[in-house]
Image (cartoon, rainbow, N blue to C red; front, side, top):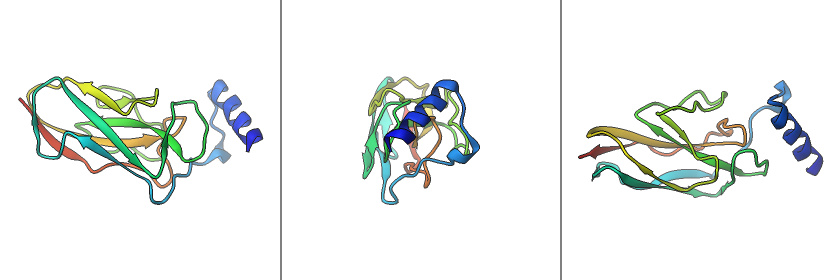
Length: 139
């Protein structure tokens, strides 16, 4: 296991994902969820969002450890392809430091939020671990 982790770290430093690497496995019973706000809530911006995760651990990006990953918050978008790195833009926020909450500032109106776990390379696990998509209204 130590040898495999070292090899993965070398590939990571080189920015290489070998074709044989496949996807990072996740426990079949792992799930993530948005703890707050709740689906249908009306919030005033800025507001806190906190992330929940069960049967799996949180680890910062670049950390190669079994059954861990880090959160990505999807705002007003659908789930990305599960076999590619999760985009990093205003609709796909990365929490590569292992954060489990954030403060968002969104314009007034209806918005959707969804969590997706990514591995040390920001690629979704196999099976993918993602939350239910919720809808909130920002005043």
